Length: 196
Image (cartoon, rainbow, N blue to C red; front, side, top):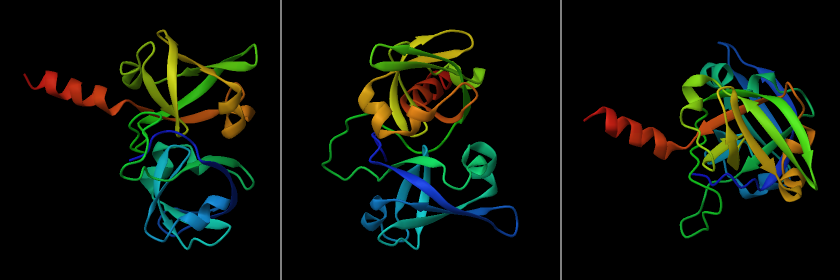
């Protein structure tokens, strides 16, 4: 389990296509020295299993499913990625409950400066948008955010300077694709209500 509070921004050091359609990703980050092989790490909102970590980098294998469902297949060498290690028992849940199970992909469609911060609007697939509510939690590229407005196209978020500095959102532009994970509690509530 994660919280959506990014701990570091890493950089893609290598992407190797694997037989059968998967890929191996290598990410450079100072966070790598805190990870052991087999442990989980969240990369742009995707929970992956770390392999071959060193003091300065870690690897992860990407299945065909991960490549098809997320934006990780479109990463290029040198691209920045948001990183988070799993929540430790007894740690603070400063964001919200994030699984690292991407539900779909959204796209930045509008951007406006707002004082020191920036507002972004994400086009969202309708099957996911139904779980996004005004002032509710949503995970975008691994970052726990609050939807500030929701309409039939998608939702807006307001990014404060701290978020822009600590995540990859400083470089987001219209057309940027992002991984989306909706609030898991909303999905469970829907399932329970449907079962009545």
